[in-house]
Every structure is written in C-alpha cells, then in structure tokens.
Length: 285
Image 1 (tube, rainbow, N blue to C red):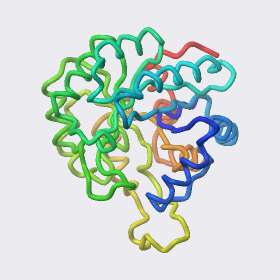
Image 2: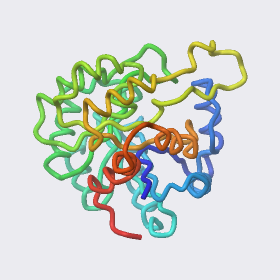
Image 3: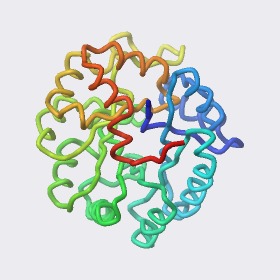
C-alpha cells in the first residue's frame, strides 16, 4: 500500500485559478490542475492507494467551512482513495470546540501552516492547539522550514519546533518537508531525539521550475540523497512518511525515487505507506 500523506486540492470551480496563482508566486510548474479528479488520475498513474489532502486556513473565519468541506470530500473516500484532514488557525476564537468537532467528523488530523498564518510554531496560540490535538488523538501536520512561495520567512524552524515539543504533552506531530525545508542541517542536529515524524514531501530530487528563468541551475537540487539516507537512519525509517506536496511534485517520480534508494524492501514499504497506515489506522477500502 502506498499512502501520500501530503497533497493539496481545491474545489473544482477555483482549482485551476488557484494553482495558476500559486505557480506564479513560487515560479514552479504544477503536475496537476489542483482538483480531486486530477489527483485521482495522478494516483492511478503512480500506483498510490491513498492521498491525504491538507487544507490550509489563512483566515480564522473560514476554519469551520473548510472543515465541513473536508468532511464532504471524505464521504467518497472508499471510491477515490482521497482523504482530507481538517484545518485550524491559531487565531480562531472557537479553536477548542472546533478541534473537538474535527475529531467527531473523523478527519483524523489537521494541517497547520505557520508561514501562511504568520505565527511562530512555539507561540502559545499554536501550543494550545498541539496540546488539544494530543488530548483528542488528532495528528498535527505542520509546514516546517522555508516556503518557496514566500522566500526568507520561517515560522517553524527546527529551533521553534524543538521549543514547541518541549512545552506540549504527547502529540502525533508530523513536520513536513523532512522536518524543515532547506533547514535540514538543523533538523539533523536538533530533532532526532524527539518523537516527531518527518514527511518526505518536496525534499528529494529537483525543483520543477516554470520556464521563466527565475531559478539558477544551482537553485534546483533539493536534499542530497546521502543526507536523506542519513536522516532515515538517524530518525529511524519508522518515523519517515511518504509525501509529495502534489501538485508541486510528481507522485510517479516521487514513488520511483523512494524505490531507487538503497533501503530494504521492508524499509521502503514502511516509508511509502506502512508507517502512515499504522499512524492513521485507515479502514480497508
């Protein structure tokens, strides 16, 4: 079973326009047009069995509406293999009650994006959310490190992640992009002795740029393979979760990249889906 724990889609009516806007911001070429139908087609090509959609709340007033839409997506999970997490914004006034509702809706977890939400991960507003997720058994998946669409801004550095972890109770915390995009040396230094999971999204391989000359050739490579393998060994393969950040990475290429690594079959299978299956306890389709 292959589980992509980090994907993004948008309602059909706005998907193409949203992806076009994000592509212009990041100077990246998308691999789908951002709809659930496009993601399902990508999954079929790549052999991905399940994809987790991660909605982001950039406005606290929209949190409940986004969570309702996520629950609607999950009504067809058995047919599509697409499952949506919920969301939360650190400034949502009803954050505690809404997290309880996320749990009742069966959404299994939430996505937090400290950069888009302009709050540091170790701010008390996020700490209370992480604590409550731990109490409810919800997974918290956090964008960590830099964001290619907003250069130079970091609201979930490895230092902030470590500080947050030290202040909250037990919580199933996933730090996206191998713990912090382009902050990987600090991730290796600071976070191995914590309980965090890392997802592989947008870490291996090269950027897929638009043909606009924005990036230099030396900007394109992401994490060196030797560093990725070292982190797998340091954190343990059981704490690594396959993700692509689709539509910004090809699911087909990302699966092939994991399969090409000098890891055992058991380790590859765990990273590609077994670890996520244990963490999320999905029912069989």
